[in-house]
Length: 276
Image (cartoon, rainbow, N blue to C red; front, side, top):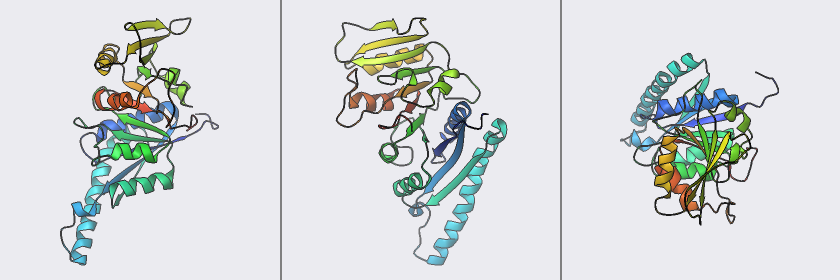
């Protein structure tokens, strides 16, 4: 490891449910590729555990829960850390989930935040609206880790991009990612007008391909088919800046549809800051 190479701060936010293990492994995979340091954060609402007005009883319940949560986090992280020789620093707090997450982000300033994907709703990994909340609070990169076909440490990945993240150019660690990717790199574009689907090489040696889809009711369905067909397990997504349009006219509704419906890990670029 080069001494002058940047170390990226990666923060895993977890509800300690079934998606936690693949989410942490996805973070480890990313950390191995880009030289990252991982921390782990969990929030527990006091109302979930305290059902008494007696202060002494409440404190006792909180202490017991603190021990139980610490033990559970340790049980999840220890085998992953040992297997992949990775140090992960865990913390957790009691309080309002959104407020505690916002406070933690502000205090620790992570470069990348990693979230797990729920089977039913993407925007509900720790209560309703948390992923949306994180995307608003955090201007850097966000990795939403899929449960199936998830990123695995020390395993080459297949990367594609959708509208505006060609060759990962909006990420300052794109070269590290592409060094671990399978060829060719693919770019999916959704445009307002097109006669039909097109597949076109976008560089002279044909190591990258562009797939163009016309915007419509079946766009995401067709895109999902090609992602599955090409075994993509990491999709790079740009954030639309307020009041601006991408070159290929990607709409905000398309971004939401991609996040909610595609069963693939999503690496969402920072909002207006190409260098994290």
